[in-house]
Image (cartoon, rainbow, N blue to C red; front, top):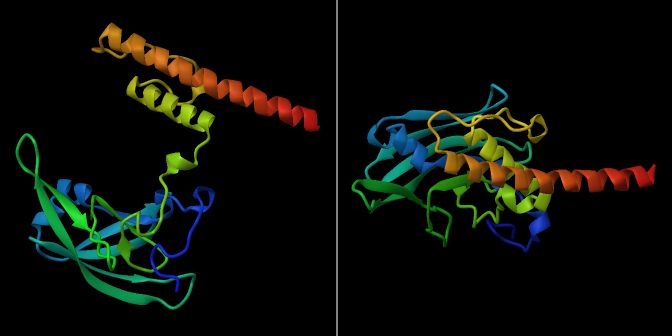
Length: 204
């Protein structure tokens, strides 16, 4: 009947986590939002433009969500419900918060909830969401990993820009290891680019 997680979808057809608005309990805890027991607003933006907002009220064992949602440009509907919290002890002291997924029959302990077509926040398992990296081809993944290393080394973004210099304070052993990993990922990505270009030229 079209409920959360109903139907079978193959990996290629899955939506990804970045397709949905999300709530991250770790971020909320870092911002001190779980300690403030009065209405607070979280907003989402894209390209500097506000695209949505939600009101939350935090309590010791739960947070109450209050927002409006429109499915496929239909009439806006108001939603207000509680999401239970669970706290676990950290290895070096303190406690870490978790959401307990509010979807009926779930209750998984998760860090992030996603707003899907059903109009409620639920875990990625309930909405059958894939991570972005699961959609990547082998060379796309190599390029992403190379860019991640470039960011760690404070190099200019873009694998076609060449290598930069060793960051101040980084050990040479670490720098050489990261550079070798970066170059290996870049080679994989460039080889695939060349292959795709050759295929395109054959078609022209």
